[in-house]
Amino acid sequence: MTGLGARCSACGADRVPDAAFCEACGMDFATSSPPPEGAITEVLPRQTHAPAVTAAAGEESPLDVGWTGPVIGGVAVEVDHPDEPTCTACGEGSYVDGYCDQCGAKQPDPRSHFTEEPAPWVAGVCDIGKRHTRNEDAMALLASAEQLGTATIVVCDGVSNTTDSHIASLAAARAARDTLSGAIPRGMGTREALVAAISQRLGEAVSSARGAVVAATPAGDAPTPPSCTFVAAVIDGTLAVVGNVGDSRGYWLPDAPTSTPVQLSHDDSFAAEQIREGVPRKEAETGPQAHAITRWLGVDSPDDLTPHTMAVDLTEPGWLLVCTDGLWNYCSEPTELRDLVTRTTASLGEHGRTPLAVATALTDFANASGGIDNITVALARVGSLTADSLPVSDPAQAEAPAPAPAQAEASVPAQAEAPVPAALSPAPPPASPDQPVNS
Image 1 (cartoon, rainbow, N blue to C red):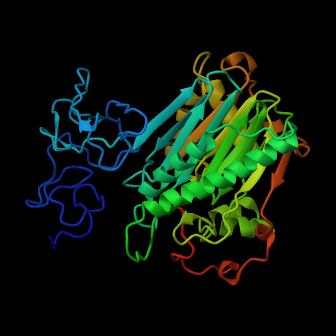
Image 2 (tube, rainbow, N blue to C red; image 1 turned 120 degrees about the vertical axis):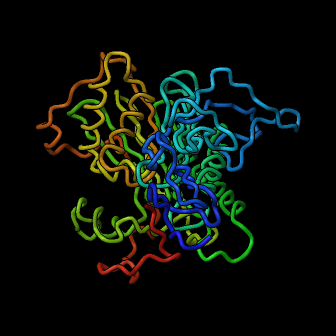
């Protein structure tokens, strides 16, 4: 169809080529008539997702593209949801072929907002944000029932200027989680040996994740093949090791204002190169091409995908946070982020300070701050899950300098400190497939 423009005239959402109805508000393009009163007229920052349906291991998931229902014995079965809500837009209609039969609103996509909580001390939220028309973030979590037993947190952010990055990110997150789920060899039993073993496993997880992205890449020479970033945290007792490729991040945020919060990841981005050259963090992270990344997972990835790694001892109460730039866009510096988390936990009440509650609140914070990108926030709690051990931080203390953390150690590939290539000079060139923009 032609003549109606590239966006819906009712809600402004991008139009899918040859679509008869607007994917966001249900407008009938054939008649150019706006949707009935009560229909969704904008892309919502938080869509109420459909009732969760859990498929058995190895079967399709509601988050998979083209999912049609659980499969039992190789046969798709119809699932009865006696408590399935009516249309979330008008409250009256039912969804038929993905749209409300009364107001025409699109049925919420379960990928737009989903949560995972493998154990009470580990949970995450993945949300579409306010500006994007689909969620290109993904996460995959595992955790033992006992706190500080073992846990795996994987977060991937699809690069938005590449094709089908939402498929790439989900495939990568799941492949990495599966690789990291196996037992870690203990070696000589020392801390150093365990850190080395986990770091090696993180490298294997990056390879698995990239392989999953390559497998999901359509045949042919796509000008912008799917790609994504990668960050994962592996917890083994009181030891955590974080590895990353790209600009998704991990942080250790101890509760005590006298302890030092630390970023546990190392951005592969133009902004990070500027910071290393002395540009202030806030200026670098908000400047032109700040989100242009220098390493990513995909068929056109750079040759060296050895993850940056950092180990930290979880020996005091605090939060291990793994997130995409949808959150750290609005609060990046570790001390400020710790203060935000502390204020957030203080506002949740006596029984609302679980990882899932805090992750939800931080997602809401990012949406309230603008929600310009998809948002993923995953947390592991060290210490009590209730209010008794969570102090309210003193803003004055939060701004005071603190000694460098003795418990954290970094392992960064040697080339990360190499001179900035010409393509990453202070006058950055326009983004290209060789320098994806993760936004």
